[in-house]
Structure formats: structure tokens, C-alpha cells
Amino acid sequence: MEFSSNIFVFLFLPVTLAGYYLLHKPYRNGFLLIMSLLFYGWGEPKFVLAMIGSILFNYVSALLADTFRKRKGLLKFIMTVCVAGNLGLMFAYKYLDFFIGNLNRIGFNIPLANIVLPIGISFFTFQAMSYVIDVYRGDVKVQRKPWRVGLYIAFFPQLIAGPIVRYKDVEAQITDRTVDFGLFSAGVQRFLIGFSKKILLANNMALIADRAFGTPDAQRSVTYAWIGAVAYSLQILFDFSGYSDMAVGLGKMFGFRFLENFDYPYISKSVTEFWRRWHMSLGRWFRDYVYFPLGGSRVEKKSRLVFNLFAVWLLTGIWHGASWNFVLWGLMYFALIAFEKLTGFPGKFKTALARAVYRVFTLLCVLGGWVLFRAAGTLAAGRYALTMLGLGGNAFFDDSVILTFREYWFFLLAAVLCSTRIFKAIRARLDTCERKWLRAAVNALSVGAYMFCFVWAVSFLVIGAHNPFIYFNF
Image (cartoon, rainbow, N blue to C red; front, side, top):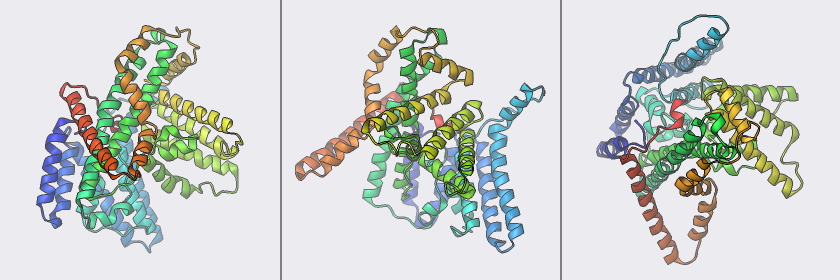
């Protein structure tokens, strides 16, 4: 089931909210767990078995880690089994056929397993694993009630596309939380923002990107290739940040406060800053469970720092999918971030012009990375990039450019503006205005705008203009 579907908005969510608030507090967590499992198994019920298996495995692993904390040898064995079990589950579902396919390319003849990938497996596996590791480290107390661990792992708002929630951030909220009108209304507002981002912006950017990337290489003009790359960059931003907005909003409706996952990443001044603003929960996960344990930046030798960065970004690329595109995409960011770490750029720049040029360079690197991310293969990505650089012998301009702007100019303009802080800055300025009537008018107009965008987005769903979330594949 998807947030941006009529079945969720007009059936599942109202039923879940009604049931939650009609029940007494002791039964609410159990009800949310049942509804979360129903949500996850809606399209393919057998995936629920993998989810329940993950919950039970990590629940027992945490109990064992806490019980045998003083027996260091046994504790290390338990944690090894836990990490191997979680990663083994991901490997079997997500990477086995990729591994077999690469073996077959070098002479083997192994039949593919053709295992269907459970949606969001990378998200809930990392989330479950972090709970056990935090118990092992002593950062959180072990949870002895399995349904609470189950709710933490399977809670439907952030189950299949993040943000990756740490147990210590919601531990107290799972056991005791309250919702007032202000929090609930803020949750509804945030959900409407994310819903509109997904349907109105991401889906329309997807139509542009799909046409551009689907055009035969010889027929794609240089300008059209750039438009397709920009459209995909905007699509993936509003697709993923829209989902995160909806997840944060839904959490607030049930009394949960999740950390933010996006912070206007396309205004970043450097590649390092981009990854502090993009998918922040994943960045924090790799920082706390891979980068810091390896030594982080506090190492004596620069070669060790480079190795630590290499390990993190190789794993980041692999996490995103079973494809050499993702591996190369991760290694590209390793090279760029290692360059910034070793040189101190752009912090060492003395002039505003140099910093502005580096900001453009950052955005171009991100754009090129998304081409690698989106293309059907590494060779296809290379051909697309050559077209963008004008090295493929393609025409500079064609009718597709005119048709795209004629049909989608409004959505392109809105997407570009919404990727900046301009609307947030205007709203902040109006909110601090001394004239109360103006602030009241702004609030009323905001409510009207949210409702208008929601109705507009629903109309797109009614006519079938819909595509699934990109990060469901991860």
C-alpha cells in the first residue's frame, strides 16, 4: 500500500485513526502493530512473514545480548550472528541474483533465484539492526515486550521508505505519548505537503524524466538530455522528501516525533554539505555504525581516513541497490568527499566568486550522479552523459524541448522554486509581522492552499496519473 493512493487516504488512514483514538491507551500499540502489518502485507501478504521473522530475530538477539552482557566471548558471538542474520536476509532477497549474474558473466552457469524483493527491506533491516547494536552498546535498555519492538520496526509511517528511526529517539514515545490538537493538526499539514509534493511535483517530473531517458540516444538532443537530468533530480527529491514529509506528519497524528530527513539539499555549498542535507537518517546510520567505529576523521594517517570514507561510500552505494550503477555512484561520492576532506575545499576559498563556482560544481556533480542513478546501466549512463556534454554527435536542440516546456513549464518552475528556501523565507517573514490581521490572513490562505493542493493531487489520482515511490525499491 502507498501513502499516495486513494485506498490509503480514504480508507486505511481514517480507519486506523478512528480505531486508535477509540481504543484505551494500553491497546493502542497492539492495534498499530496489527494495522502496520496489514499495511505492509496489502499488496503481497507473504512479505509479512519476512517482516515478522525480522522482528522476532532482532527481539531475541537483543534479549540475548542483554542477558549475556558480562560474557564477552558469547556476547560477540551473539552480535556476529545478529549482524550476519540481518545482512543475510538482505543479501538473499536483494543481492543474490546480482551476485549470481556476475558469476555467470565469468563462466558459471547458475540459475537465478528470481526472489521477489520485499519493499523497504533495506530500511526496516537497518532500523532493526540499530536497535540490537544500541542494546549491545548500552545506549538503550532492552525492550522485553515483543509487540513494542514490533511496533518500532514495523510502524507503517516510516516502514518502507524511511526515515530510518533510531530506537533511542522513540523509546519513550513507544511506552507513553500524548497528542494534542496542535500536534495533530501539524501532522495533517505536513502530510498534505508531502502528498502534494509526491503527486503534483514528483509524478510530473517523472513524466519528463522517463521520456528523456527513454528517448533513443541518437535522437536525444543535448538540451533535452539536460532537461531530463534536471527533471529526474527534482523527481527523486520530491518523491523521497515527499514520502518523508508524509511519514513525519503521520507520526505526529499518532503522537510520534520523528527526526527530519531532508533539508533543502540542492542549496548545498559542497558535496559534503549535500550529504548532511540529503537522506539525513541514512547518513547518521552509516556515521554511527560504520564511520565512527572505523575511527572516523580522528585518525593519525590520511590513508586511514581515505579507507574509512571508502568503506562508508561503497556500502552506501551497495545499500541503494543490486547494480553496478549504484556501486559506481557510491564510489563517485567517495572520491568527491575524500577530495573535500583532504583539501579543505571549499572552506579555504577566500572569495565569494570561488565559493559560488564551487557551489555550481557541487550541483553539477549531484546532477551527474543522478544520471548514473537513473540510467538503465553503466553504458547507458555513459552515453547519456556524453550527450549532455555535447560529445555524442547529437543536435543541440529539438522539438521535444519546446513540447516539454509548453506542457510542463508550471510544474518545472514550481519544482525548482520549492527546492529552495524561498517560500519558507517568505512565510517566516510574514509570521514575524507585527500586524495580527496579516498573520491571520496568511494562516487562512495557507490552509486554503493546502486543501487546494490536496484536492488537485487527488484529481490526479482519480484519472490514474500515478507512479510508485522510487525508494520502495530499496
